[in-house]
Image 1 (cartoon, rainbow, N blue to C red):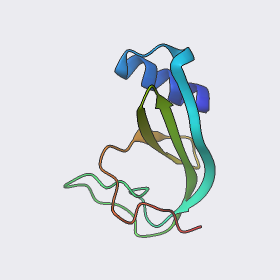
Image 2 (image 1 turned 90 degrees about the vertical axis):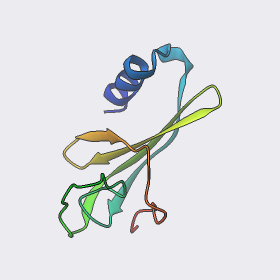
Image 3 (image 1 turned 180 degrees about the horizontal axis):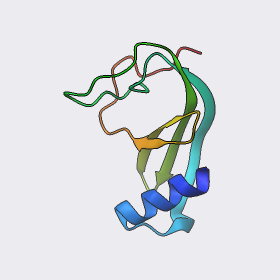
Image 4 (image 1 turned 30 degrees about the horizontal axis):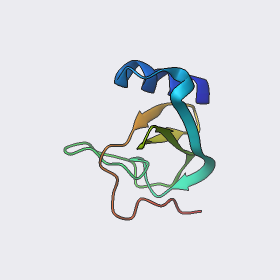
Amino acid sequence: LLEKITTALSAEENLDLDSITVIRAEAVIWPDGSLGCPRPGEMYTMAQVEGYWVVLESGERQYDYRVSFSGLFQRCRNPMRRQNPVG
């Protein structure tokens, strides 16, 4: 899963894969289906969602990824203020 996420970041930002470092990769429970990163106009389940929180770094920039337990991931550009997972 980390390989898929780093490859996606590399392609999106035109980064060398060797320049990407994993800063955080942990299992979490998100408070709802937005995975702590809602998009305007989208509807989400209000149930807690098991998943992962992945933060990558390249140079001085960090990239926040939210991942569902099933392995679907999204880059979070505008996290909620209360972005921390439930536990």
